[in-house]
Amino acid sequence: MYKMKIASILAVIFIGMSSVSIAAKKEGDFYQIKIYHLKNDNQVSQVDAYLQDAYLPALHRKGIKNIGVFKPIANDTASVKLVYVLIPFKSVEQWSGMEDELIKDKTYSDAAASFLNASSDKAPYDRMESILLEAFPVQDHLLIPPTKNPERVFELRSYESPTQELAEKKMAMFNSEEEVEIFKRLGFNPVFYGKVVSGSHMPNLMYMPVFDNVQKRNEGWKTFGSDAKWKEVSAKPEHENKVSVSHIDSILMHSTSYSDY
Image 1 (cartoon, rainbow, N blue to C red):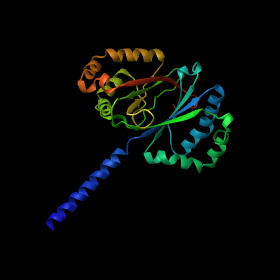
Image 2: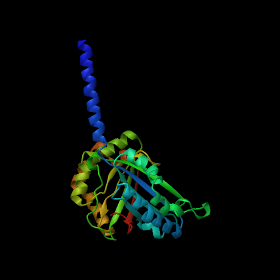
Image 3: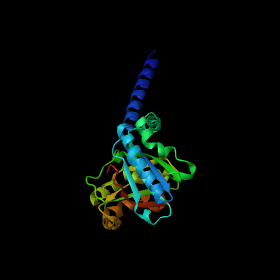
Image 4: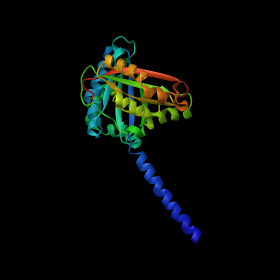
């Protein structure tokens, strides 16, 4: 009987601790990045109209704010034009249920009808890509830039790793605050840091610093590369980028006029 009581007490403690752990884990945001792949300016216009007049207003009505919409600086000369949409969710459940919520929204359905029901010969985009990320504990919510100006540059950076274990080591470099503190000191102002939990390139982490303009961005990374603390941190065997990162992508973007920031 005594052993049974002890076992019961331990079970209750374990369940309680697990509940606290799960609740704590859910405190951080999840981010969806939608990427529209477009072949011409007509499709760009259709996506802009859909996002501005139908999609963002519908998400706002559902209580989702601070939605970022961005276009790469290279869009004007690129053969494939891209539009990025960054959406913060409070939980995976909120993200997974949003499409059903939108279907029930008649205002959205009416505003989006021409986009959603377009014929195949007048498709508003070639394809749409979706990436789901979990916010890093070190910064578990979006940090929105305080000012908005057309020259600001948002840099979406993506770090792919050869194995999951090495990806975890690279993410630990951020979550230990070593790299994050350098970014803060140098004024990189990242909007988010996130682990890719679903996407076409995994294992992977992504983050988005913001700069006043392209020149400030270039100067910032030059300063970062020569920073004494960065050299000290990156020299540690467990943080060596050549080991933990196998591929880096960097996309420079401006926010659209109808983006929330």
